[in-house]
Image (cartoon, rainbow, N blue to C red; front, side):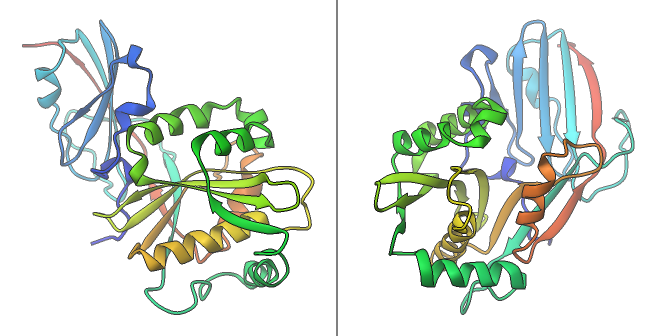
Length: 278
């Protein structure tokens, strides 16, 4: 069995909370679990799994004259009857890292980030900087001053905030505090699934003015150590740059590739358009 389980299938995470109540999002099924949203007469559904979605389950919810269904397969390559393949490009490139059960968490990292983690631990950690659990308000204030916020207009935080408010026990918010000023100058927010023994990188940021300090390496180092101590085997790093994606994604994709990263190429999307037929 492949160790990578898409976070959309984690039972601990309520993805209905990501979307506006106006869109009436609902989970559908359990194996695979899908998400449905929209407004009458058009509803969208999405499934991320190699298992066939049971499309009859959606018919027991609100009647919809038109349903646009998206199926994002991971490793499976066949196209079952009734589905159409949307183009030939892989729909996503995802990355993940394995956490060693014991010993040095940096064992599979590149030499570059190993060195930066060493510098972080010896020169900065618990001196002028410390990693702390933050409140949502403090994390948000730090994020709002970052370049990530300016580029994405806070879109990531709105969805992530819904997940946090719904089930904060499955979320970690870590911040790097600059001790002399007391300010949060970098942050990392992750979703956790004890049942899948996995953790998902949801959002990260750092503030300008600390170029000489490996803030994000320090946060990743903390994430790996926390995961090892809490029986988390797999860290999911989200999407990676592919040809045709915005060039701004390249730099951070390169950074995330340095932690012993392995990859999963999602197969081209399958789509199906259905009408209400009850």
